[in-house]
Image (tube, each protein chain N blue to C red):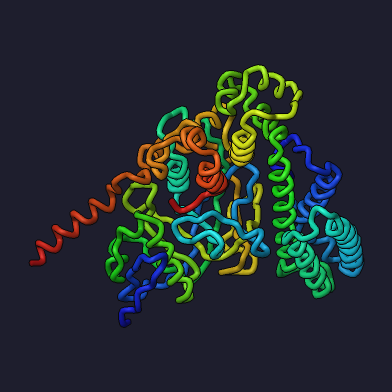
Length: 237
Length: 245
């Protein structure tokens, strides 16, 4: 695949991919925290109700996005990072709902490892760095027909911690008294995602808080990957 | 449901009640979802008639509520009114296509869900409009932070301890001191109160933030209320649900 042109957003050049990310299909169990009483997924009818604040993979007003983590600690770490929770008192005053969801989808861009970013000619720092670059990349992914992206967690600084972000609105199919079904109503890519409320009064775990990379922090997993990459390159030489 | 246990007195309390009644009607139709029972399916000609009739009645009731709301001057030029009427038409079209009332592809249910989102947005809109009144904002903050020491609440709001005591007792006079600050804090507390205890909310205002150069929300408010509102309202709103960090 030839290198695509760079896109420009707010004067910042964002290098596009040299090779298209692998488009994967799969079935995942994912986690998401919300304020108690708030629906677990974003959906909207029109511009007035489409007000989702900007995040790593979208700009406010551009579209709706579902931010999910593939582990419960991943979801909690997102909360810790967003609210800058640093102390036990901070952690225990926080009361959140944690949802478990079943996702069946295809055309998900597999950027789940820093190796995958490098293989596509993308700077892995975008995965965990400033949002402007990842937002521009998200626009490109949407234009190329991807329905979402798997990416290393910027918040949970643990090797293999991955987030799944789905582009577009989704609706929860609230399941009570049963385990998650394998298939959502309407099959893969349907708007309905089976969802189980795990707690409506939970706080981030100590583990998640201890392994959270804060906004201005150094992402240890990325640093270790870079160090390992340098060693591998030296060995090859 | 409203975001607050105690309804915020809106400009027109009757309007708020009507929106909440509509929200309740739509939510009740969405949850709990009952698959048709085996018996229903076995006696399908009977159960079909019952399902279709019940849904027609429900739709007519909701339609009436929506049209009454749409005629209220509060929503005269509001985009939410247009969205609500459009969702009503979408719902009508899906119901018309679902002849046996089973909604096997969940298309009627989808239209109901979108309608519910719009109605919830209307409730939020009413709440925000009410909190723009400093007296309402003061009462909300005093109530949500009722377990916090009165002096702490007074310092946060830039008010006297006597005033805060009065507000806690429901005696809210016209507010002349720091009305903009009180309104901003009221709007922030409205966004925060679902997740945080009263003490947690107070701590939120005193936690330094990397994105603001390690300044705290309280420091931003102390420096410039208007500038603080631009920074803090999106921060508090964004805390409603997980965002990619």
